[in-house]
Image (cartoon, rainbow, N blue to C red; front, side):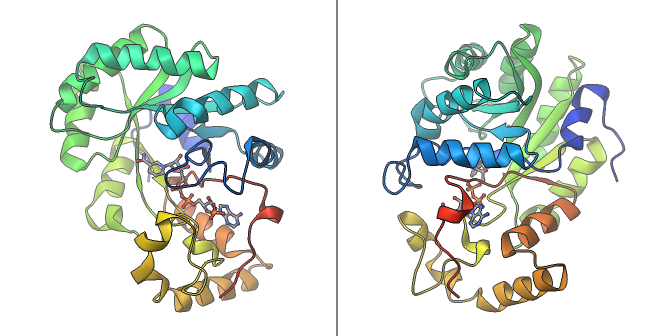
Length: 289
Ligand SMILES: NC(=O)c1ccc[n+]([C@@H]2O[C@H](COP(=O)([O-])OP(=O)(O)OC[C@H]3O[C@@H](n4cnc5c(N)ncnc54)[C@H](OP(=O)(O)O)[C@@H]3O)[C@@H](O)[C@H]2O)c1
């Protein structure tokens, strides 16, 4: 149940699903440049737009700005309206409210935009209080550089502090972007999802496919490339029964894929999934269970 959604943030609640852009330039986790290029990424963007996606989630830190540059380039090349969300990363040498405003100006330059639709704090830090961070976001709104503001990876107590601080400036906390998937249901257990619904904060679900695992294309014999393989080593041996069940559910619903089942699950829980995509699906490795 959504009870407290204001006019300024209503548009976020109307978006069923977005597209994550971490893969667009990231070499460390996603191995950008090894196996996929800007052309592949552009195709992933175009196919997403053709299929109705209108919300891109990027961050200044993704590919050290490359993701924002590619996002800006792609949206300039489409005639469809695309909403953009990006994020401030609290690096230890940027710990004042002012650094948030200047970081957003840098993001806008890379995106080639005058303003974004959602500006988020990428994660909390013990070095800068939620109140100070929100002060920085207030300045971003007051300067007309973002339509709404949000947070990411904030637990419930930090989220409530952010919410109250913004409320004192009559600014709604639009979103909290957190890890949420069939395999990671912490936000249900710790009450964050329920509290977001109660306060009209859109819960944006990152890694809704558990970094590709829920697609069913990876297994113990062919783990995902790069450091994802080590990260998910323990889980890979345990998920075949879940993947099998998801495949059966998909088949019972008109032949839907595991990816569709996983994303629909998040949507039905009342959150907005933002799956990442680095290439058009026909070029992805096919499922091996
Ligand atoms: N705020 C934060 O701290 C934070 C943290 C993580 C992510 N995020 C955001 O959330 C977004 C999504 O999370 P994520 O990228 O970590 O993981 P994800 O969305 O769970 O998984 C993305 C991966 O799933 C696979 N995939 C996607 N569509 C597919 C399809 N149709 N068929 C088969 N496989 C498919 C691809 O794997 P392969 O690449 O192996 O082909 C893709 O790279 C990110 O891009 C980013 O915008 C935010």
